[in-house]
Length: 385
Image 1 (spheres, one colour):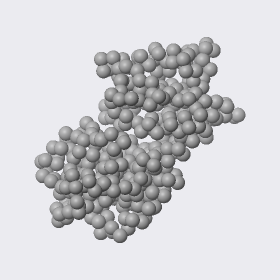
Image 2 (cartoon, one colour):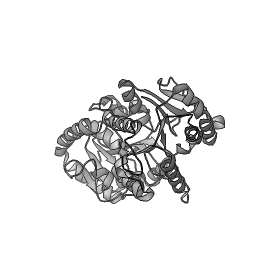
Image 3 (cartoon, rainbow, N blue to C red):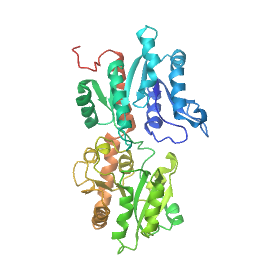
Image 4 (cartoon, rainbow, N blue to C red):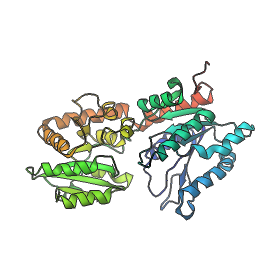
């Protein structure tokens, strides 16, 4: 099977972990897969990436280039399946035209990894809905990241859930595995400290500033430290909050390469996923939670459907009711008081990751769906077969 993956990733910030982890699985199964990315890489890219220029650093210019070059790429690579994210679905207009003229016989699959997470007066949401309407008319299949998101899409667009596949986030359990990093602990002055940890995007509505502000309620715990590793449009606001409230137990470090993330998670005694119970996150598949579990770390989670889908009961995690500083503080204090549970929770989390949460398993779901689409077994509108 030959696959061409059209998406919105750029080479300067590979935040789409699935683009790193999924292609090698397909290659091991004998498939040919190529992934379009925007920009030029500073280093050597894997052979399955096709890097296209961003003229003048403009993403709009990149989108135009992809639209115009896709027919040529299809002639060159002869894909059986074109997979797109919702931001890139409309870039297939010339391919849809070529199919209508009998010039292209491949299948189109629309993948939805996330819903719009911007407060822009509804513009992103409108574009998202337009992309799904376009896919409903012209694509052969749709995949989503969670069951709740699939159900939401089916309800809004009149589609049959039986013909939409769900493949979630995953984790590389060989890359993320239990380890120690005493050298980095010493370097950061974290020896004999209890380290609460978060890594990832520092953007709006993620609960990170609220997590940092929780430290002001934990002043009686001198050996406590909160380590936040990340980047995003709220980083300056986070730094300002830490300085203004004199949160000297909070350590902020810029984001690190994907290959180095396990070395930083290794520092953690307790990992936190502070996402609020927001419509954006209820239909998400929290990648960092899977990474924490794979490394055998106990976790503190907000009460939310996306978290309960992975850890359904209170034995596997420390849950807090909402994303507020005083509530996070109470949760951290409760976890500290139950450190005797940490080893068992870590062992359970590692087993859960290995059994249910691997990228290998998620890639298998996507690959099986592609084969079903190619065999004509998928009918988006639920028409009788």
